[in-house]
Image 1 (cartoon, chains in turn green, purple, yellow):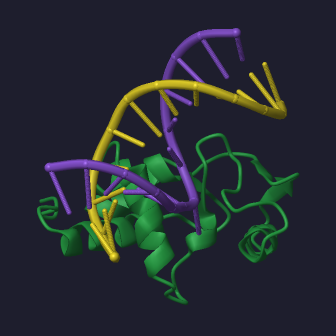
Image 2: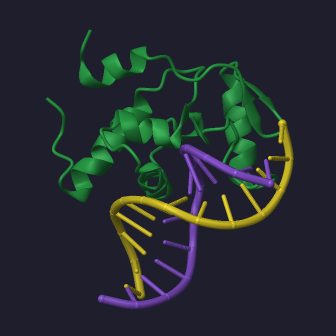
Length: 115
DNA sequence: AGCCTGACAAGGT
DNA sequence: AACCTTGCCAGGC
């Protein structure tokens, strides 16, 4: 049974859950995360959640643009940290873009507990 | 209500 | 592939 999503709080929770569901060594787009959270078309809501929640355990660095780009401005603190953290997980990052595959479909199972 | 702001997305050039 | 324009949605004022 999917979460409520009728109020901002539950929406944020759903998004956080979707983000945490992305496996190490893989990445996912903002819109992708939104969809998996049950919020299709709300990519920008994901952005807002990420801006607010600075949770240390949140794998925020695995979230990138749909075209594989890192969303932070080149040279910014976030840009450098994200690149570094991704590479630390074995993700290939070239010129601010992630080369390789995006998160597997199995992520959905992890979120909704289908397995 | 109206306007501005975002770590976006999609489509066209 | 790079770049620009348009569409979107929620928040904060």
